[in-house]
Length: 108
Image (tube, rainbow, N blue to C red; front, top):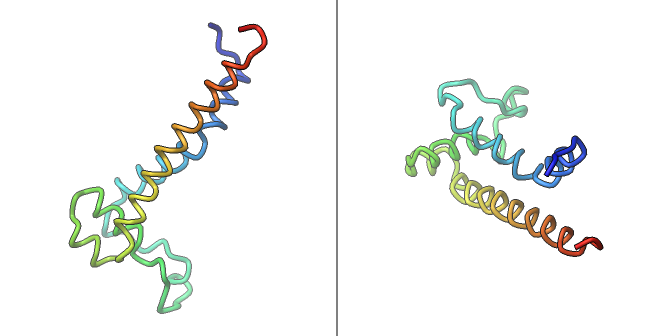
């Protein structure tokens, strides 16, 4: 089987959600905890932001520091579970689309 450029592009697009979420989790995992906040509202000197600490909370959860995760943001662990769920099902559904379109091919 020869892989063409269009097949690679089609597969990349098919798995794009899983690729993006996986890249986000890898960056969050390796991001040092002592870095300045990336929050735009924090940079604009707005005191309260509903998402501040969420990235750090997810990073702590991935390092199995659940108490620190909860102290940074209460939704860090659920957000991490939701993202893992999205990665799993986007890969599963992309594989299903690939198999079903191949099974219905007129030459098979």
